[in-house]
Length: 433
Ligand SMILES: Cc1cc2nc3c(=O)[nH]c(=O)nc-3n(C[C@H](O)[C@H](O)[C@H](O)COP(=O)(O)O)c2cc1C
Image (cartoon, rainbow, N blue to C red; front, side, top):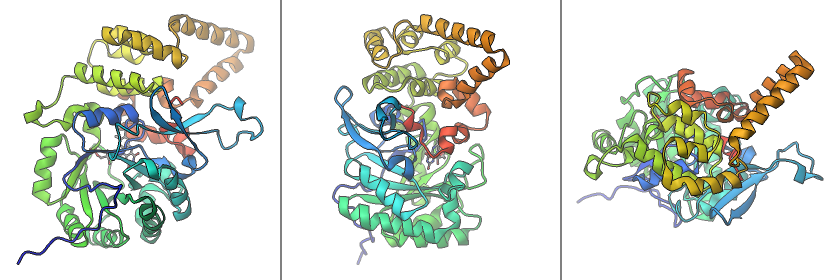
């Protein structure tokens, strides 16, 4: 007699992570156009970038009729309530309800069951699941008790998951999941996984590195089978993450370690056609991927700073056009550099809509003159002001390219140094509304 494996029931509006190769949550690199591209190339599901509960709470949901996206926007929390029009509205999170339908998992950064529930309720009707980030090792996250700090407070992490399961999962009929890292010993990892699998979650992702490990260090596979076994025993789907290069490799690793699926981050950030198997044609040349990415970014009017940052990842540093692309000032200029003739008309339209304008060269000249006159007028004060303003901008808008980011120790590291991130505001918030 064969026994039917135990499975935590998948709610009606949720998705089963079993048999799925998915795009990892990535701050900045996992914004809407990157997710849509991953889906086009064959990712089964996509995780959005970690969004901190407090940055989500207070957002207003709006439909953008031009891009057909759902936008969650807010004014800065210190904005005067009587004069909101004077404050710049920030975009915290964006969803494409048709193209991401039943494919998008919202990842939350939290250290509080109450805030987690309040924030998750805002997006629950528009996503296929809510995932809790219990793996980010960076101080901006851990200092607030979020991310990898939750691995050291398993009771709190379990209470967050239990609250989400009861108050969000059950109400909106979606699954709740968690993404963790390995603990120092297999015994400690085992105890944690057992505790989490007992909360009613439908999925668990294990990033096969410990908290102090850097992204360049090879992922550890030794504990994987044990974790997969506990998940199977308790009926929770188990995704593996860490050094998975492409779909073919993911399928092999799933077989080898008995996990249910795999999650890809860095390889997809560099070329999202890694979700195609060799039989489907395999990895595409970067020019083809860049063409598709720009087309998608234009369709959704992606904030230029984010598009430029992603192009810094997708265009090889050695390519002749790399420098020109990463210093371009708008979609039109970039399309001209990359000879994307078929996208030029759309690029002009989007530049105009985003206020980048066709006169970007003139605008740059004007800005330089302004800085010069400020310096002349204020001496060193003028200079300080010019630099001060610059340092307040998000990294992508300060011209920090992917190469610089990687040189500084991995782009996730750089994300975490962004002042916005330190304030608990996800990179999504700097996208165009
Ligand atoms: C640019 C970047 C941003 C990331 N942002 C997040 C995030 O928001 N939430 C999260 O849980 N992990 C984040 N990570 C970690 C990845 O999801 C993944 O766990 C890690 O990169 C290991 O997978 P890999 O070896 O395939 O890169 C990020 C990684 C990168 C490279």
